[in-house]
Length: 377
Image (tube, rainbow, N blue to C red):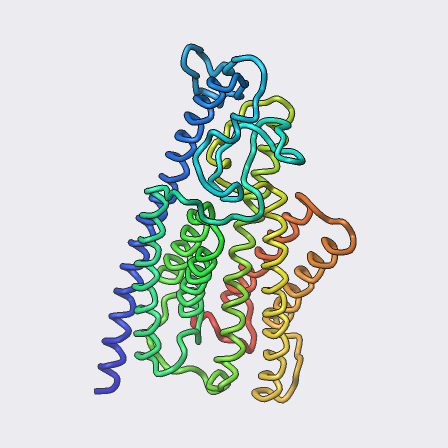
């Protein structure tokens, strides 16, 4: 009878995971729709404001302004600061602030392509597609939580004892962290990235790493599983956020350079995203927190190894790659803080660190023999 109950709980968990993936998919579409719709709306507002204020707005490729053709610029004479102040109402630091000029000191305009600054607070208005996307993400996270909980009840332990459980729980934590940060910071521009990665993790877990509900090997039946792996999951979730920010930073940097050189703004949706510098600064802060968590992951893993196998370090493949990740992120923090590695170099180093995390939890678990049995394959 207990086995039947466990199997039933496992089936419920899989159903919840499927429903969560479906809800996340709709949320992903809503986030993408928000970026596309808002980009067009902000462009229209800029054109109207520029025409009224007598400014020039660089046209997007393929977008023709009223009275012009072939994407020509709106030419209405001298520039005016009213172009920046006549856009949608709300705090100047919100992520969705539209503008056709880069504000210099004292709020003066200095060029095209303004994006939001580092405040990233919620504005008074709410974009309907973004609001729907966030609501769907909350619903998906609730269903996802039910899947994680039923998996835990079915297995009679914490739900991260193998690769399937690590991916499903890790995806939930990544989405939960994203939603918690949304309370204070307007990071809805990350929605497509975070929710998209959660969908990929759930699909990979179900297709490549599915493992039936069952007990763990004796070495993993320890309270250190709760401590060590839970911190690893949380740190990985934070690294996921910074990976998305670093990728956007590279895109935003390219866009800003293109606009500064007089090119057309072909990535209008990026105007909903903060500047490259703002993304870099926030990514650096979050990486610093995640690095502390990963340090504890490495330390507690060594302590657990001594308890289970009688040694703190044995050059197991999993141990080595956990240390490699620590070294990469330590190098990133050190290079940016003391060596002046900023801009695209810092972004690429952050991305390399996350790729090491992905490699550690996929390739190493599946193809390298060792004492760590997380994949369940």
